Image 1 (cartoon, helix red, strand yellow):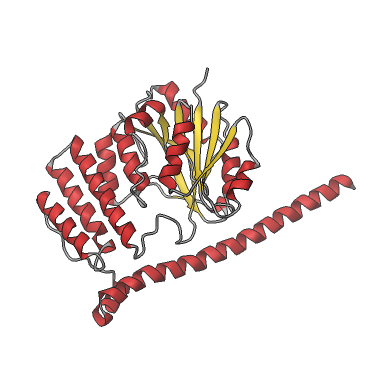
Image 2: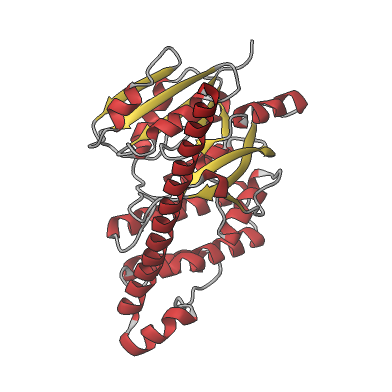
Length: 349
């Protein structure tokens, strides 16, 4: 009998996307699967929309709002799968994503091997998804993967991973204390419980880039800054727990330096903690530097205004691009409906 794969979908105020995401899970060609949707106290129509798909294969549960990590832990406590597939409520998978990764088991990948896949980002038009390979898109040992992730400021999207039950149990639950970078922290633990990563390029995930209100956006939130620094400290401790060499310490110092601008100048207390941590690693941090686009604002008006511009200008640009992509997607949908109606008319005539 083929292994059972649990597709776990935490959802909060995702009424615009949840139906497509559930369909993406249902359309997986892997024959043995269960789909669990956990509504985390949504205030929109996410729950009733998800309930329309409830069946023997699709379970929908709800709970009071506790955050994405708590919703994932709830889904994890319910699932029965031999493998776990995480899927955020606005993302999609190619129909053969899981099947292609499971094929790796027939080619020598054991249950301790962490399976990853390619991912591309899009807004509204799926066919415009951009797949940009990085240094993580290959087979790597746990240490090498973490060195590349932290040293080059890279990421793998949550849905790219397919995790065995053995690895999932070894990693433990999601950290509900973290409001940001909870996925990065969690998969560090999963990675350290593995024999390394096996990258399956033919398997594909589609990551929807929504607006700046998404939970991962930090902005000027003091709480999120604190949580981010805690996650960074955990990343460093995890890496050093498996290798504490000069190259590891150098990457950890660079990791702190690359993210220092997030805390400066609003949270100088966190900046001092980062400097102290860098000192224990044998290095020192420099005052963050702004790119030329914002450096002149800093020189003329000071750091706070320059930091504000650095947050708001990309947000405005992203909003314009997103609105344009949404408008074009409506034209695409209109053309599809027109073609379908025309084809229907021709068949009837």
